[in-house]
Image (cartoon, rainbow over all chains, first blue to last red; front, side, top):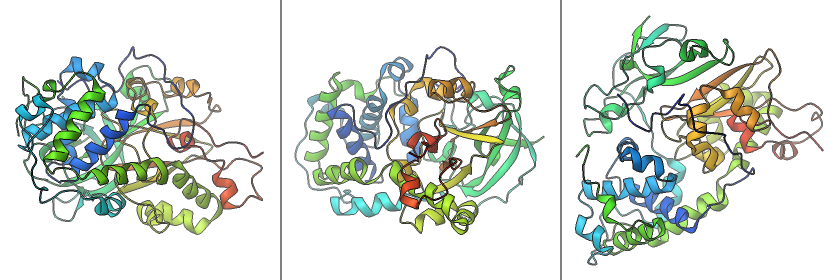
Length: 224
Length: 204
């Protein structure tokens, strides 16, 4: 069983509402701050992007459903700060804290430009050899679960579990979110893009020859 | 790290999101966990510098310069880095080209992965439950909500971004643009055309 964030294919969400082109303005002043605080605190390097995604995913389903995008970010940030020991529950409740010297890994203003332009590489050089190549038929794990942690982070959506597809791209070794999100090491694995027939995924597709692709790690896949 | 905390710490913050954010900013600043000037630098990046004009410059060059298109096909990350485009949420880029046979569209059903260095911060619709849920199952119905109807015979390939690979759609070059330069071409390339929910504008 996956979590509420795993919504691909779900019915009932209503229409998509297009917006003007160009740079997207922040709808609310606090959205700006929510984004900046999340990136600045993430810049401490205390948690990985996989842990941050999992922190959003394990919000209570009723909170996940009612929170806007940046409310999810802020809630997950508060949870991560407490879980990693950077902030206490008492400080959150008080909305304030005793003044303290700068953290040794403080993400300083002068580092922002270079760090955002550099990003974080997720490719690795040491790990298992690729078991598949473009053109190979593969079947995905069923059910879509994290095999290390019950209810843990995984990037295999439920809608693509137990499906047969065709490898179309091979990306080399990438950090494995299922282990990295839980502090179990980066465990790099070969990553592939796999194409699935829409007819296979949905039974009745809009068009039988349409396809959906997913980026999937080697341990999600068996030969088919 | 704790996994399912039955007592989520975030619930200790005020319920009003603006007050929540203010409380966190106060705590983080006083504890030396954020540099207030870093917040301004982050916002300056995404409000003024990084946006879809960068992706549009890549598409226009790909339309105009066959050597660049070849470089983009073999290693898009390196090709855009040579144009000075790189960074967070765009560390591993793949360009996918629309053709008369195939129309590409990008989604992230599990969260909202998006090629930030090329397109900036995603629009609200890209992050919406409706788009995340429906783009994989009924992409043609979603396209119709953007006013796009594909010709018969053009199949769809929807890319669900489940890893750290970020996809940039290279739309087809509009007819009647043969004489245009790169800057004029880039002006036709909309953000949505690089996600695959739109098409480039027609030349004036």
